[in-house]
Length: 102
Image (tube, rainbow, N blue to C red; front, side, top):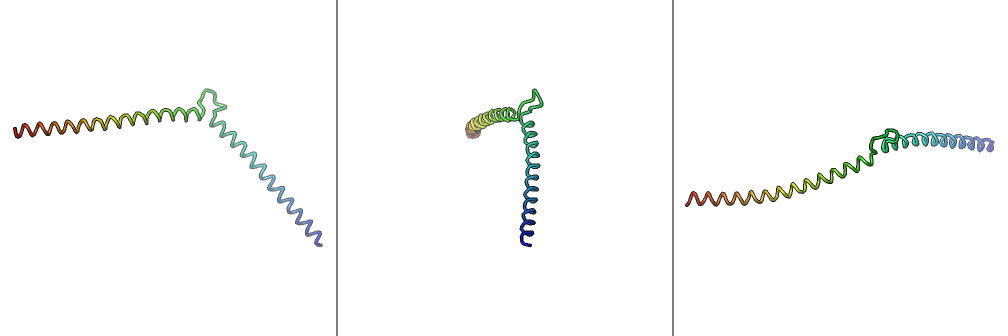
């Protein structure tokens, strides 16, 4: 009787292991299809003439870098102009005092 129970448990273990093997193989095939689709989308392997995702990202990075430099230049210009406006405001105030008290 124990031999039957042990054999039965062995059969159940084999069936369960086979099922998990089958499920893993099926999932692996689905994953391979998904990976191929992702590669196609990134590299445009089937759409000739369209840029790859990497090329678009690199192009955008370069454009953003140029924009950041332009923004920095504009910020420096604004600070410089603010200083000039302050100086002119002080000169105007000085001239107004001279006119009013003069």
